[in-house]
Image 1 (tube, helix red, strand yellow):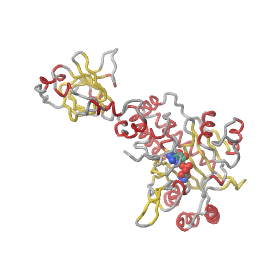
Image 2 (cartoon, protein in one colour; image 1 turned 180 degrees about the vertical axis):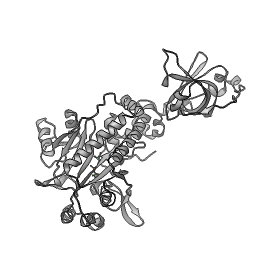
Image 3 (tube, helix red, strand yellow; image 1 turned 45 degrees about the horizontal axis):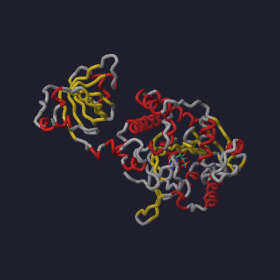
Image 4 (cartoon, protein in one colour; image 1 turned 30 degrees about the horizontal axis):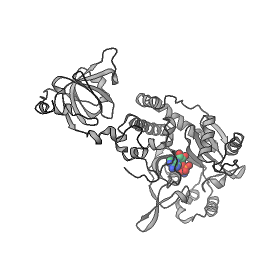
Length: 455
Ligand code: 4AD
């Protein structure tokens, strides 16, 4: 049959076959159309070939019959080959099922690019249950899968929703630089590089730049990659992650917390109102529940008490004491036990960044917040900022930071200061929470983490 098939030629039909994207199929039933895409699934049965075609906008069942199934390409067709199919979309009778309840009855088709079979076949590359490091090497193929592509689609919808939510609050988007000469979150996680002979870093956070925008643009936000040379090999740490940050002027700590609730809940409401995104979200995380407001507020000192009362130890197996940086495992156990969003507030000064405003009632603590979500733990870190120049200069000194490169940040307190605060939200952590993913690595297009910078 293979030999014979080489002489089978398909005659291309004349007439106007409208090129459509799969997602628009429902509107173009019973008309001549053509679609292009990748062979997602393939099955031969009783002289017919069934293809589930994928073009990124959706999936479409296509059926080839008669001579169309007898060509060399038909007999040797493989998963992930690209094809173009001409035909008519027909609604499926009751009792049969396919995406959008229709199928493309083909008049003509061609193979545009054949994918390999045998050892190199797609299914051998991304075999289910394969070693994670092999799957990481083949991430460029893994993203073609239904789960990975669904995560990426929800990610796009989430980014749209965040932007729409900011737009509705009249908060302006800016794009701060990635290459910087100041640190924000401590020297130990800085990626250094040579900048025309000077030391420079990949940004850890755009916060300092956002603060300078307040007098210029009012409240601002940005979506920027942040970089951390993390020593921690955990399922929620990346070396490069997408950081959604905002800075608000003339706010109190409580107003900052209320704004955060609105951002998180408003964004989720928008995603749930988007039919395609909410269907994917439900498919990935059927148990997802929209969080209720107000979020639980928990003082850091009460968290320490709670951990001890519930016999949750430090990584070293000890009881927690005030001053401890609550480790990921303990934080996760507490969040999962309480099983609601938590604003953990007022962390001790010594475990937090130099710029955080002290609590008026006790200067050893800061007006700071971590937002913890079940399944992931911390997804947001934020605080009120010191807004007095003298106090900030003292804080640089205490931290052993040279104030000189920060002159522009300090000027913020000199040229018309105001009470202000802001936060950073880890987009991959937010997604891991709403999509119930085991690791943030699954929520990044090409995740970077210790020892992984490819593909
Ligand atoms: O708590 P962080 O370090 O706070 C800041 O960078 C502030 N300067 C932000 C601001 O106030 N503008 O980081 C904020 C958030 C964390 O809550 C977490 O969600 C995420 O960024 N994050 C990471 N996500 C993935 N991998 C990492 N290595 C991360 N480090 C922080």
